[in-house]
Image (tube, rainbow, N blue to C red; front, side):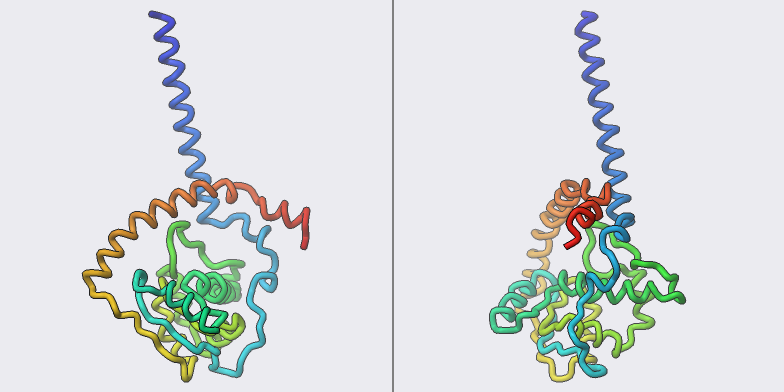
Length: 231
């Protein structure tokens, strides 16, 4: 009986220890992921990871097609179709956020009058689109000339605003002659059903992927790679 009791206590102790380690890991992963603590070591100077195509004249973004529609209305399919039609720099919401909006936002926060931060405030690792507080701040200085330069530097031919719908109007203002594709083919009931079916799957996938890749954020692995292979 005593041996069985000791075995049970040992099993409970190991379970408790594993649970504590798991919770600590999740907390550290969440902090490392949301604070981007290693970004200054990994990303290098801004010129290393920002678009560098020649800028077009003032107030000209170069955007030829603007796709307006909410998620689950065919935005990704339309982006792919435009690419196949020859608009090779056809951006979806993710590409627009990564290559255009994020550097634009970082540039705003690097100015001394805006805090002199190296990077803009980090988003929740499971979120997409624009952080509300950050948008409200940056929107105050979103000059058409600056946004047109940001778009033209990335040579955006077409763009679908999935998750970045608030950038539709600023983009149209600097994209004279751009064609507009309205993705309104679904009824509200059809769209809502698609969103309700897709939302839980996206949350599950994002959480599982973020947890699986969490160890990448715990230490500056990118810095080690860059040190070993500068190219």
